[in-house]
Length: 457
Ligand code: AMP
Image 1 (cartoon, rainbow, N blue to C red):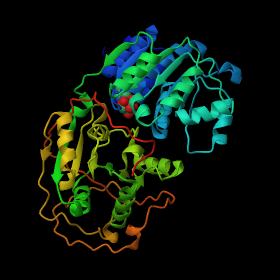
Image 2 (cartoon, rainbow, N blue to C red):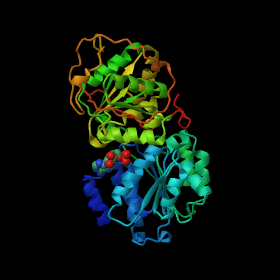
Image 3 (tube, protein in one colour):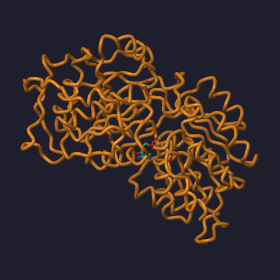
Image 4 (cartoon, protein in one colour):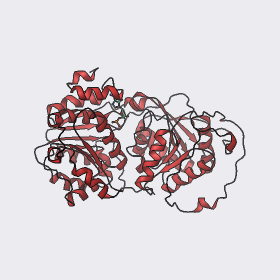
């Protein structure tokens, strides 16, 4: 399948795709779109980054086209398609994609998620929307407040179903499913096929067609992976060194805890980097501001925990750094899936201290390859860039091996617990240097350890 035009999509949708710069369907799109158009239930194994959103959104829009109407009457715009997702960020991104694909039709979409005042969402719901993207908890709040009716839903999508189960949404999902019309089409997307996922699919899918995009994810093949074996105390200097030595405009840095994320952001910020942190302790507004600033290039280094980073879709993210590697090997796959998307190449660097070596073994077992080891520079220590020489942003600094002395950090702030503050953005420059490609990520269908909702510490 080389062309979207071969997929029998309406001219309004094709026009939007052309404007989005899409020329060729991705493998999951080529497989899923005809099946969804036929009306089949679907169980699709696909990671974020494979184009799975359009794989369900495009045929969904196509099927809803007969209902599109310019009428302003809310009664003419009942919710006909419901897309459930595990996180707020993913909800925002999925709805933004749906909106972009639907922009030349009269189909309306809306996103609702927790963490913001429910009253701000109600008036929009009342105007009527055909496609509703929601996180389960907030949808139930709306159902309880009778601000949404689901009795006309004819399509249901469970996106990142494995994440939803991991995050404990099963009871919420069951409550929601019980409220939907029995006669409907169900689509389930999951990066992994655990026994729980299979059980869930047997409960709510009817004779589903199964799609697995190649286990050796084409996206991940574009990602160069590297490991630096370093002492824990050397990590910050190495991080700053890597950032300075690279010309990437955006770097996503992962930490295990919210506290570490805040500390690193604060320290990098003091050292002149345009850094900010995104994690579950931050308000939705702060998270959105940080993400927007990162996307627009005002923030070049975003420090995130796994929970906060779930569902982040940043086009052509060139570099991901694991400041700490995750203890659940599957999270490594998800983290590095943030780079190398939609055919772009990327680099994923992991800073591994001796106490994390056991996790590295698990990761390499899972991805079935040894990640390239890179020698840390003799002393990766680097000073803060001089304020007067600091350019605005997107200026490429290449001084990776400059010998410098480490400034002791005696800021009392570093011993304080995190307190949310309005998202800060500093203008500064960026990063990235890559080297030889190493491993690939062949295994995407595996079991993941349970994570509590927004449990990051
Ligand atoms: P997803 O897996 O849905 O999160 O999509 C990952 C990224 O790929 C998003 O930035 C999409 O806009 C982009 N994308 C999806 N389908 C295509 C396509 N057929 N051609 C080019 N880019 C695409």
